Image (cartoon, rainbow, N blue to C red; front, side, top):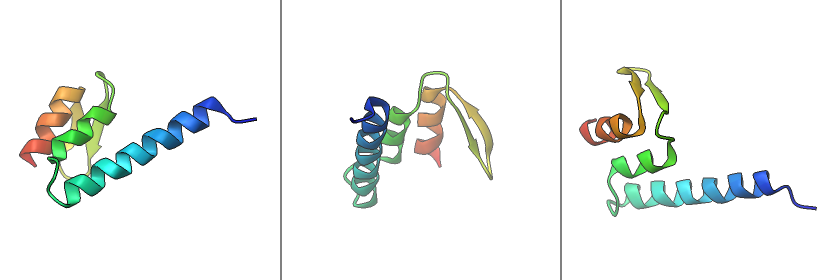
Length: 64
């Protein structure tokens, strides 16, 4: 019996790693990682602090 939540989590992780691989070779911008956040997400950067909301996170990834 397969746990559907675990299966979905592993698929999402694999897509995330693939996105990071594309970023590392310059095929995608860092802002592509924002697609893995919910609209109301909070991202806490150790140097820059808290960023609220997916689009603000996307802007942060672009700017940083």
